[in-house]
Image (tube, rainbow, N blue to C red; front, side, top):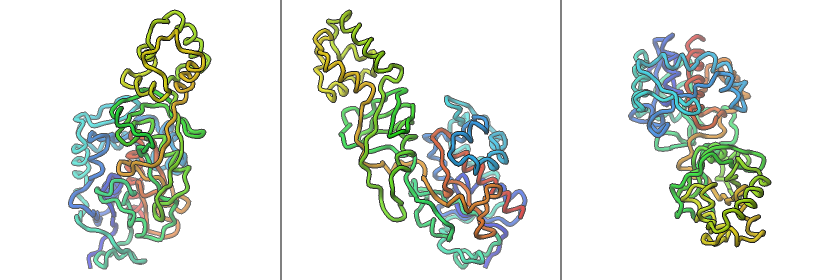
Length: 397
């Protein structure tokens, strides 16, 4: 039986970073990866460009999370500057403080991390099935400390599996889909590919401003993806036991820069001064061209009708739908969910070390924890910072 000081389980962003940090202080670290290669999910991030982090200030970053107190120590222990210093190439910053490698290739980030694993033994095609109380893994490896960085349930082709949650007896919260496109009851095939820019999407009391993209099965885009976390958390289900039963309504404010009153004033004036204009042409002032025909079909108004011939009832219907255009949602497009909502219960994890308060010597990092953020580099920031803190803490103990 082989023996090591530390075993890191999972070769994703959090696991690699944990192994790098542990390897700096210990000469006996093994990284156990289920796949024949590391970082499969990392290669998919940012559309293959790798949105490696978000470059807001630490305070601004923390304000983006509900459980910011848990993340505070890890974010200050391993900052964005620390992350950038690991690589020998440049990064670029884009809209909303998103950071990418200048080459725009996620492969460069992965190879840069692998270079830093020179002090770490890597065991590929090693699926961890059992861990004993005295830290014997698969009856083959004996270690003093273990870091669990197995990820969540998203992208199972990358090695993530719901079975990973049963490797330890650590308490869990409900496991749910996060950052997921939504499946609608309405067939949207005719407008697949159309984007609504800078609209406001609402569900109950939650509101998100961003872009919406129509797909063949429903709604996606940054605005929908971010709102999906709120939707998922509001539904009672646990993927360890059952799939979600989704039947709800979301609304899109297609003209967030106007109030209803302002739209009414604008319409009243324009319908008189531009009376011979057809409504299908007039609405191009408010909606993207490729969406106008679909919108009018849903509100049951003849696209050829002139403004002067639209009655008060139809005008009010136009305004109401411009401010609250609704879709019935019947599911999550789980094959494209980006993160997992839920995971290892943070109440039983020391935020200053990432160590379990129940099992000494057991650490957790990354998506396996019950912590997640919006799209835009936030979740990789969690992975790298919690991974580094877990590796550092395990190696110093």
